Image 1 (cartoon, rainbow, N blue to C red):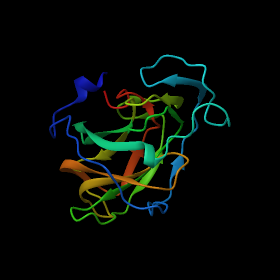
Image 2: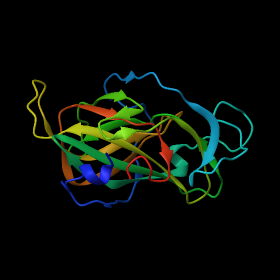
Image 3: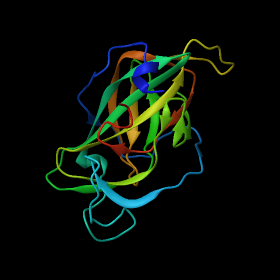
Image 4: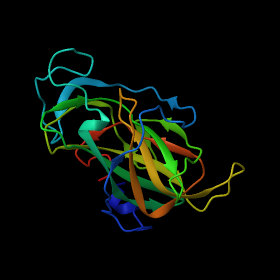
Length: 204
């Protein structure tokens, strides 16, 4: 089943916001659980084409994509049968190519920008489909995306609230980026998290 078939338009898609670098410390998000997956070591460009640039574990080739090179934006949200899907984009705003791989660190934020308890499960397969790990090379202006899965309309013993923003730490970095979530999203502390994918493919 495609994402389009599942979508019920809980909120307007395509929202975006200006990103600012918020801090230089590690996220205070809760513990994460990594799922077992088969990863690709062949870098691809943001458009999905294979490149010959070295992978993220190599010391040659373009540098790592760090927060100073990136901007974070909200792509939108959709949902089905009590499951909500949020999409986010990391765009290379620098003048040079950079490479990245794996999962960002995330933390939901309140309306005033305060940290909300966020317990993430890293996975390559969630309610909305598969999102394999792949090494990425982002040329200037290109972007990678990731998605977050939350629950909607369900009771939770740990308490639920509305998140109005997201703080993100890019893979292999400690500095953070923030963006607003248009109209907010209902979340209950726990969330599934996809790895970075080429372009907007993690969400669309």
